[in-house]
Image 1 (tube, rainbow, N blue to C red):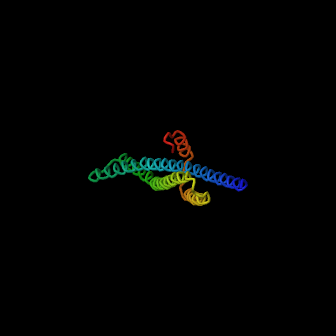
Image 2 (tube, one colour):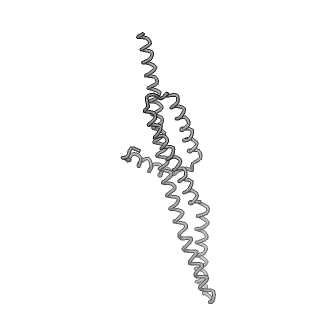
Image 3 (cartoon, rainbow, N blue to C red):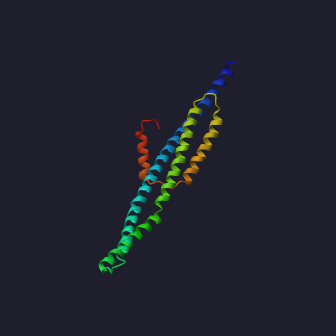
Length: 182
């Protein structure tokens, strides 16, 4: 009888250790998902700002060229005026080409999508951590659920655009300073 009790205690301790391992891995994955979400949101914001930084001058320069051209339709402008208008037109076209080439608007949307998906995974892991505290659950079931979330995390890493190291580092620093318990 004492041997059965000892065996049950060992099984309970083993189950508790497995549950602890699952919870530890889930917490690590949750922190990484949170950090990746923040890094992608920062990258999206940066790309959107660069899009505006290139787009605003394109609009202004194109408008200036159009207005200047329209204003000189009735007159014959001098050579300096024609050269200046051509140079401004060339600058506007170059900036527009750069804006198209770098696809900052699309990059911003891709990072925003990835950030939202990582944030959703983090929230799912938050719930998973609460479920892990239920002592009546079987570690094997929790392990299967965590395996699915890990696969989801891995797929997000494969399908998401790269984040610049300095933005990831910034997200990591913000996460370390977070007082809300991320």
